[in-house]
Image 1 (cartoon, rainbow, N blue to C red):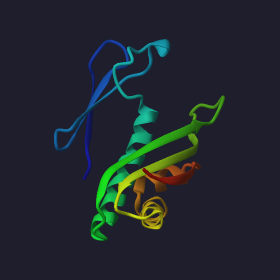
Image 2: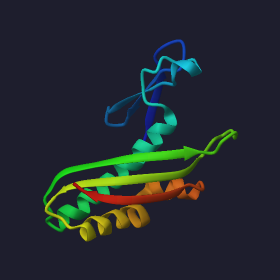
Image 3: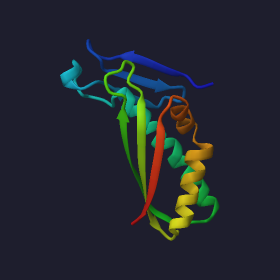
Image 4: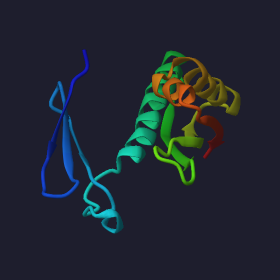
Length: 139
């Protein structure tokens, strides 16, 4: 079972989350919203979780194929619903960037398997109505 402990660490909106293995993440909101800007915003943490989840899948797939990855990065852009509360992620676009001895086709296949089949965060976001698109760049 997954378990997160969250603790407020100032008198405003800064929190530290700790998982069952002791890993931590600091969360906060921007200064213009009353926070101090000293942590990841909660909705951006969700996009980070998407990147981490799909990243694990993609590296696992490419390692099984014995592909040599020198650099793996991604840029994730999201747009939320305007004027709504809660403001859900409406569109998300990921640019997967690779450098190594793999082809465009191999990279695209690994990314498709992750986003369309294996990544639980992607499935959760899609179930909430987000449209997730992606592209691949070989550096």
